[in-house]
Length: 90
Image (cartoon, rainbow, N blue to C red):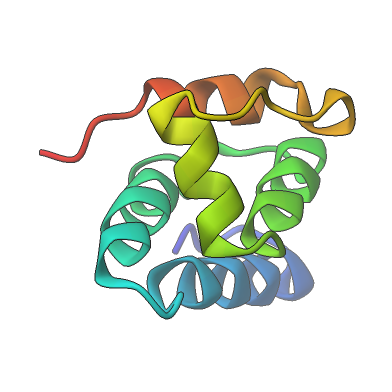
C-alpha cells in the first residue's frame, strides 16, 4: 500500500481486493481478482465505487458480459467496466 493514503482508503482498497479475489468461482477469482490486483492501487475513489459495484454483481452475470452473451446493463456502462471487460488474465 502507498504510505500516504488515508487509512480509510487503504482499508477500502484491501476490502474490495479481497472480495474480488474470493468470488465463489475460480474463473471469476482470476478475472475480476486479476483486474483488481493490477489496477486498484491507481484507482481514484470514483473508480473504486465502480469496481465495488462490479464486485457486488453475481458471477454468472459478469461471465455473460465477458463472453458477450449479454449486453452490459446501462447503469454499469463506465470506464472501469470497459477496462475490466478488456482485461486479460496473464
